[in-house]
Length: 196
Ligand code: MN
Image 1 (cartoon, protein in one colour):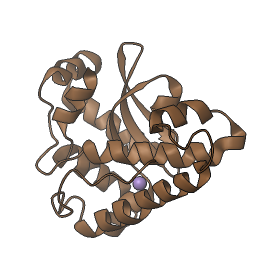
Image 2 (cartoon, helix red, strand yellow):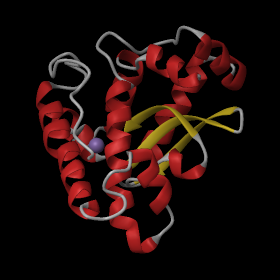
Image 3 (cartoon, helix red, strand yellow):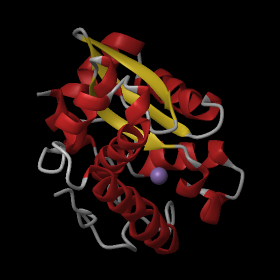
């Protein structure tokens, strides 16, 4: 049984970068709808009692099961995204990921610029990511519900760039939303924990 996880913080704790109103809709309506839709699609099937990662792995690439993949991946991506954020976060990283970012991109500033650019240039809906891919840190983007989990990559950090993530607060200004999240909300403790 896949259920909607609680947000890991109060709904007003990301304001003013992301308002309580946005979280009310984004978590309470959009994320919940993916959970509800997935539940209906897998009810009574051999996927009903599996965990999300197993469901995603089993249906990835199966066009007959795209609905299951899309909803399962969106449930996973959103839960991961909530954990990537915290009030008073963002800016230059701390911990082991700081050295890896400097080794890979030369500086935090260059990394931040490329992460923002990945989100800005994702055409339509999708996600910007920091992943580990074969031992190498990479910045990637995925369309719609797609997730690095389906491509053999380990997600370390994500930013949702669907319009529902920012439209109430930023209207069409996706670059401003990305810049503010990167500068003020990234939970580097969570990213470090994902480095494993
Ligand atoms: Mn979303």
